[in-house]
Structures are given as structure tokens and as C-alpha cells.
Amino acid sequence: MTGTTTSRETATSDILGALIVVSRRGVADARTANLSLSMTDQSILGFIVDHPGCRSVDIAQAYRLNRSTVSRQLAGLVALGVVREVADAAGRGTPLELTASGRAAYDEAIAILHGIVAGQLDGWSDDEVARFARDLQRFNVGRPGETRPRHPLETPDGPHENAPQGAEEEKKEQQ
Image (cartoon, rainbow, N blue to C red; front, side):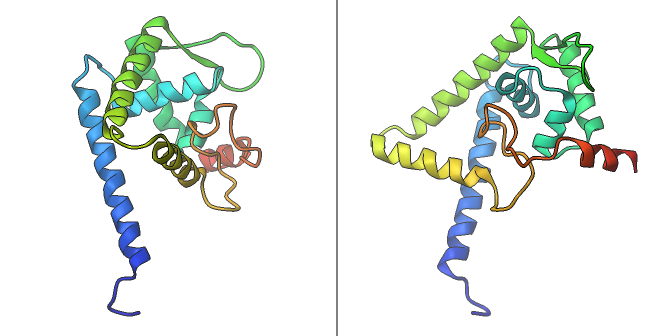
């Protein structure tokens, strides 16, 4: 097998290439809207929508980011008036929610991206679209035995039951 590329390796490279194109196209098309939000901003808004009352640590865990990175991003979103912190005496961290303008910006971005995806699927049968959706969901679940949270769009009710509850992340932050 040395020196040759297997059909699986070729297919894997093709998948990677297609995912890169999809990501770039999504970023470029979202910029055509009247949105002042980056794709990172939109991802954070989406996480908050899918996980009401989440905290910055939840976002950091889900996206595998440093909490300080998420805190800086959230500070910008709060300054833009699209996210607000909710007063909550219980627990660590402050729950987050979208403001009315945050929800409107998120809904606009999703509508644009949904339109793009629907356009790309034009001409596909309902069965082909359903299979593609199942395959992408399976792809996004993660590797067997993985204990990190799944992608937020994959688990609208919260992180995977085996996901760490923040203790390991906090330990890393203190080092």
C-alpha cells in the first residue's frame, strides 16, 4: 500500500475538500446579509438558542475552546446588544440568553444559510436528502468512546451524558 492512495483515503480527502467548500461558501454567503456577526458569533448564538440558560463554560466545552476566548467573544456580543447575562444566584457562571435583536440576527443568519442548503439540494429526492441528513448527523456525533460533548446542533437537550461537567476544564484553566 505504500505509494498508493486507497479509495477510502481518496474519498476521505474528497469529503474534507467538500466540507471546506461548504464552510467557505457559508461564511461568504452569510456576509452578503445585513449581519454584523461573524460565523463564530453566529455559532455562539446558535449554542445559546439550543441550550437555554447555558454558561460560558458550557460553550467552551462544546467548542473545545479556552474559557477566556469564549469570554472575550461573549463580551463583544454583549456590547453589540445581542446577548445578555441573566441574574442567577445559583451555581457557577452566569446564564446567558439572546436579546430580541440577537434572536432576530440569529434567525436571519439561519434563514440565509437554510436557503443556501435548500438551493444546493434542489433536484435531490426526499430520500436522498433524508439519507444525507442522517449521514451528516452520524458524522458529527464523534468517535466511539469519546467523552467530550457532541456538537451543539446534535444535542439540543444538552451535552452527551458522558460529557465532563467542567471539573477537568477548570483544572486545566488553573494550571
